[in-house]
Image 1 (spheres, rainbow, N blue to C red):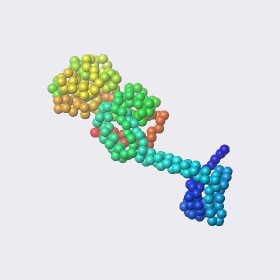
Image 2: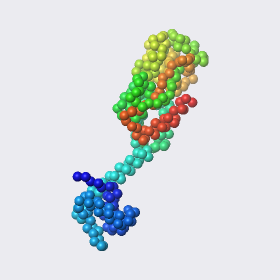
Image 3: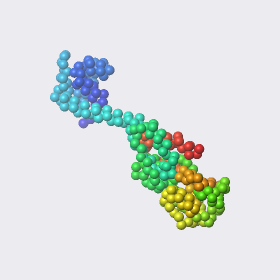
Length: 300
């Protein structure tokens, strides 16, 4: 059975049910009385029965009309709620955005971006996952994250991605270290240093290994997980480390120095990444636009 009943016809029916007068109902719907009468007739044709009993003075529901009125009111309410709710999502009054990002981004650059997004769209729920690059991609694949800011070693062919930042590496050492006063330092000048590495699972470790291979720079008994541990070990004279510029806010200490690496140096590309096969929501699109708008601040 094919049914062709529009929202407009349902609203006309409910208006007549309430006002019980064709002239007033037509005025309320902003149509002529003849047009309104035609709408009611089309509806009755579609449902296959009379919905109203009318004479020159009265308009009342038939028993079938009363049954239909309950269903029509429910349908109209559901449609209006759905459109209202969808309008809130379109207007970014509602929604959720998940962002998976490197801890070095989550700790310094991201918070003011989140604050600005929340100021613009206070009704959108935000969730931040501060995890390593591989975990960022996992969260993206699972659908927990809409957008990732990561430095993956694997190809990004199956994702949409844009270059976000070139994260250049610095030597972090104590102020009294023999290379601390140099304008820049070569990898060769670090041979023999006690080198503190981040965990093998981090993109920092992977990029250093790819860049310097098995030179003396990478030989060390210290391999730790957290930047705060790296800072503590360096402060107590237990070594130096090579770390990207996004991590430098973690090493703001009067006794620590960040020395640039001499060209060509080491760098890791950071990308903003999202799924090709899953269109971003309007709220997530707004976050992506804000990331694009604010990413220049990393190069300032």
